[in-house]
Length: 440
Ligand SMILES: *Cc1c(COP(=O)(O)O)cnc(C)c1O
Image (cartoon, rainbow, N blue to C red; front, side):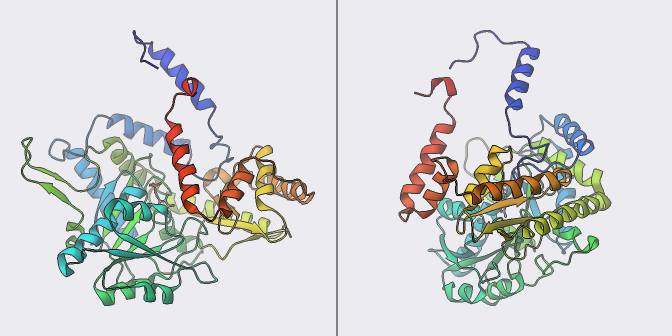
C-alpha cells in the first residue's frame, strides 16, 4: 500500500477511523475484561481535553515545557504519597513495561556499581509479569523463577534458596496479573535488605487501587514503601489511575537508588544528552492527562470508584463460586482474579461464552479464565453470570472443542517444547503489521 497521492478530507479520514473503531471489541459494554479502564464519560472528557491541549509538548525537553515539569513532578509527588512514602522519587514512563525495565536496570546498575556484579540474576515468582522476562532479555539479567505456595503467593523459602552472590533484584507483585494475589512483600523485601540488593514491587495493577481499599472496607496485606526493604515500585496510571494510555510511574525509595536508572551521553556532536527513562521523546499529552485525572477525581473520586469495583468483584466471585462446576483460584486481594473447573473443560466454557458475545481471557498453568473488573462491569454482573451458567451447562453436554482458538490454546499449553510455542507467537506478531488486503 502507498499513501494516497492527494490527501483525503478531514471528514473522510474521520469517518474511516470511526468505521475501523466500530469493529473493535465492545469495551464500553463490559464485554472484555482487560486492556481498557474506563471510569466514565466525565473522566473521558477531562482526559481528552488535557491530552489534546498538550498534544505537541514533549517530555524530552523540560526546559522548553515547564508545564510538563510541573505536571510530572506533581503526579510523582501525589503517587509517592499514595505509596506510603512522601519522600519517594520517580519518573513517569509510557507504561508498566517501561517502568519495569527501568526498575530492573536500576537494580542491575546498583549491583554493578556497589558490588561489581557482572553476571546479574534476578529472583521472581512465576506469576511476575512477562515484562520482567523481557527486561531480563533486553538487559542481560538472568531470570530465576520461583514457584508459588498453595495460596498462589510467592514461596519465600524458594526465593531464599534461589538467591546467589550475583542476585541483584527480588521481585514481588501487588497483585500479580494471573491470580490477583499479593506476594508476601515484607518477607521478600527483608531478603533483599539483608543482602543490600533491590526489591521491586510490581504494583502496575494495584498502585492506584490498593491505597483506596481500606477506606471501603477491604484490608490489604502490606505491599508499599511502608514495608522496609522495598526499593522500587511500578504503578500504572493508565490502569486503575484511569489516565490515557501511555502513562505509568517508576518510583524509588530515595534519589540514590534512582540515579542508577538515568542515562547520560557527553560526546555526541548533537550536544550533551541526558534522559531519565527508556524513551527519548515522551508524550506530553499522557503526562498532562495523568495530572488532570488525579486532580479531577481526587481521593474521593478514586475511593468511590474503588467501592464500585469491589462491590462488583464480590458479586462476581460469589456468583462464580455458587456455580457448582466452577471455583475462583486462591483468595484474590483486589479486583483481578481467575476461575477454573475441576469437572468440566474450562476452554469449552470459554468457547460457549464467546458464542454468546463475551470475551474473557484464557490463561494456562492451570487452564482458567481471567477477569479484571472495572467500572463498566457493574451493570453486567447478572447478564454475565447468566451467560456463564449457560456456558457451563452447554459445555457439560460434552461438545468437543473444535479446532478453534480454545482448542489451539489448550493444545499449546501442553506442548513440552516451549521453543515451538515461542515460534508460533513470534510468527503471529510478525503477521500483525501486514496490510490485510496484501496478506498472501
Ligand atoms: C499491565 C501490567 C504490567 C505491564 O504494563 P503495560 O502497561 O502493559 O506495559 C506489568 N505488571 C502487571 C501486574 C500488569 O498488570
